[in-house]
Amino acid sequence: MIDCGHNATMPWRPGQHLARLGVSKLDMLMITNYDEDHVSGLRDLEANVRVDWLVRNTSVSGSNLLSLKSDTGAGSNIKHLASRMHAFVPSQNPRPVFPGVTWNVYNNMFPEFDDENNLSMAVELTINDAKAFTRPYTFTRAFTLAPAWELQEYVCQAILDKVY
Picture 1 (cartoon, rainbow, N blue to C red):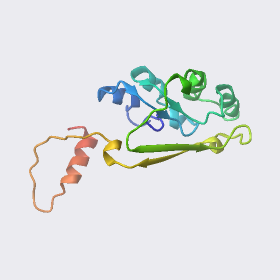
Picture 2 (cartoon, rainbow, N blue to C red; picture 1 turned 135 degrees about the vertical axis):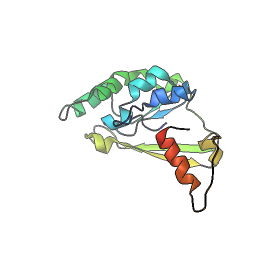
Picture 3 (tube, rainbow, N blue to C red; picture 1 turned 90 degrees about the horizontal axis):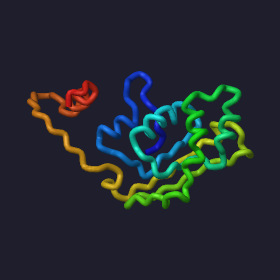
Picture 4 (spheres, one colour; picture 1 turned 135 degrees about the horizontal axis):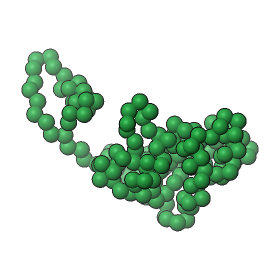
């Protein structure tokens, strides 16, 4: 999973959503940026799903993060992440391996760079097998097709309206 923000205009939360799908464990969570919109669902995620591996810019410690945010003020989710960084030690679990997927991360180092945006993490994913990215998805619904009618538009609207 890359980042764990939530939708501020709807009640969607990443941990609750994954739990509803039957997901109880994430092999890996990547935090690409130390801003609220990238971590606002972390508490919910941790409450609902076990996260085995946290990938982030490790040159920044929890105390560094709080210091960097002192000018603009650290929100509650950044404070939570800062307090949890020590709990995610990569040596606790082996680096996740995803068949058909290779990944690398790149970031500038603290203290050479001392602002949050320049300490963001870039993620490079190479997916060699499309099946490695998603599991099969089945959507069952009776449809009545009419001339010049777009099935895709109906399915998209049904998903938006949550009538599936």
